[in-house]
Length: 152
Image (cartoon, rainbow, N blue to C red; front, side, top):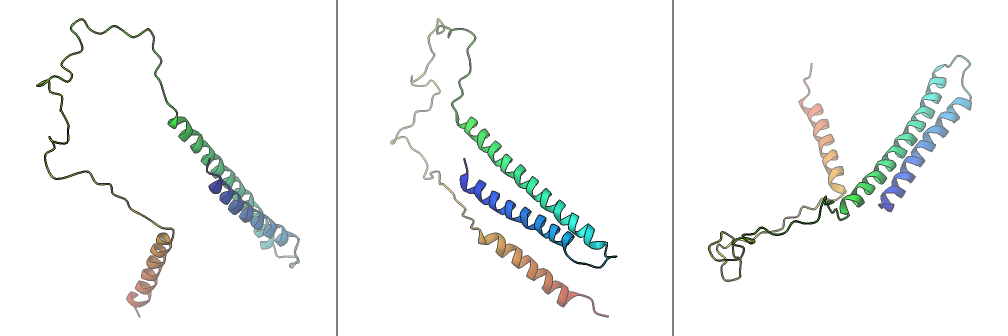
C-alpha cells in the first residue's frame, strides 16, 4: 500500500479543503455593506469549493487504494481450474523435443551468432523537469506576446 502517497494526498487535500471552507465561512460572517450581495455568493462558493475539493481528495485516495488492490490481485499466482484430471500423453510419444533436426533451436555459448546483445534502456525524469517545462512555455508565451504582438 502506498502509505506516503496516501498521507501526502490526505494532508494536501485536507488542508486545501479546510482553508477554502474556513475562508468561505469567514467571508460569510465577516463585516460588509448591507447591499453587498457578492459576499454571499463568494462565501458559499468557497465553502462549496472546499466540499468539492474534499470530495475529490476522498475519491483520489479511494482510487489509489483500489489500484493497489488490483495490483495485489494481479501479483497473485493464478492457476486455471481443471474440469478433469490431466489426460495421459499421446500414444506416439511427446514428439521430437530435444532431438537433432526437430526444429527446436539449441542455444549454447558456442553456437552464438552475431555481435549484438539486448541492452536495457532507462530514462530518468525528476520532479523539476515538469516545472522547467512549464516555466519555459510561460516564458516563451510572454516573450512572443510582448515582442511579436502587432502594434498600432
